[in-house]
Image (cartoon, rainbow, N blue to C red; front, side, top):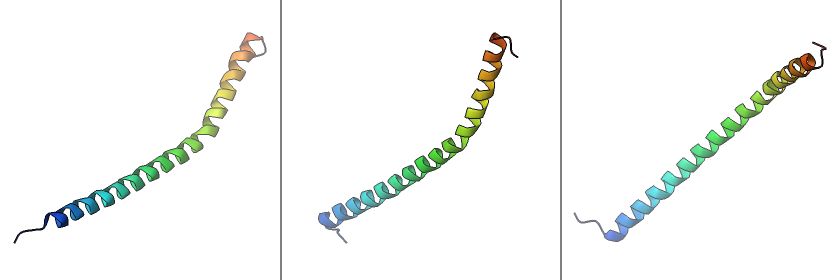
Length: 64
């Protein structure tokens, strides 16, 4: 049973196309999840730096 070279090329092309599609979707989903996590962290960092600067600048001015 001998396969035609055109059939082999078509199968390889389809496999690469499907693999590329799923890899792209995976990377997009991963990027979206990282973006959502980053957005959840922003308020925490803002609160921390607000406290930090109050402590630093408050002690420099003698206000404590």
